[in-house]
Length: 339
Image (cartoon, rainbow, N blue to C red):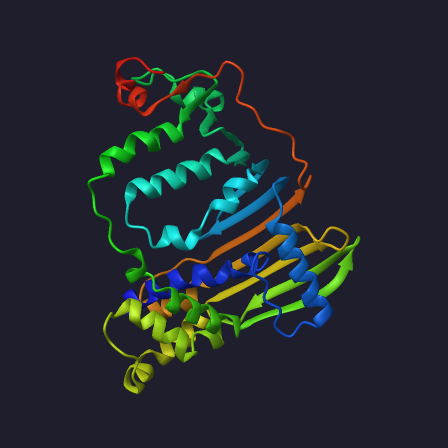
């Protein structure tokens, strides 16, 4: 039973964030044709987006312990690199060298900045031209007396170079056929089942922005035969879902369905059709899941809000002046003297 619960939770993660993914693959449900057209145009606008800035808040509460996060950042992608990327081809790829090459191209084609305030602790990250940087200055009090030399400020790691070095090492290895583990047809079927229980509605507009609210009916979803077949296949490979099995897991599924709530709010600028804001709330009822799992499960809630601006006009990012850049070989020798 507990293994089935774990599988349910894994699938739940896919379901919960499907509302955010709708910006790229819109689900209209019972929306009017005109409202659906807004989401369709928004998906097209987002697909052509090459840069933006953002701010965010993330409030996590687990068992009464609150973890507030705030931050901001920006990103820029090379349209040529994105256009050349084929997710399906990478999913079916078994050559690790080729996979690392594609990953390296993606990293080189993406620049990004992320600044996070985690309960008063600032964390500053930067990715520029395939090099990942971190600002060690806020961590200085915790690193004093470390057995290795740690940079006092910004320092980077050549990520693309690391992948290039790893490629020959992995070249002789055979990778499992990924598509046999994650059947694309099964993925399509499960998402088709999930969509039936996703409700999306249009709320009142705000300052020239269309507002769409999405929620998921987990109670009904966990009673859907297609969904249950997928979950049972993960929990008990090779076995089919029978009426007897349904009778056994039915009460448990009802408890699971009542243990989760999820909603998402998306705002779309009606002049540019870019998504200007995405917010979500996820709640896990520990008492309901404890009854199902047979052990104590704590309440968990996560609320997030992301606001976007400077569409296709984000400031260019550059490497921190004077920041040392290490290679994998440097890290291997870190015990001998640092960067």
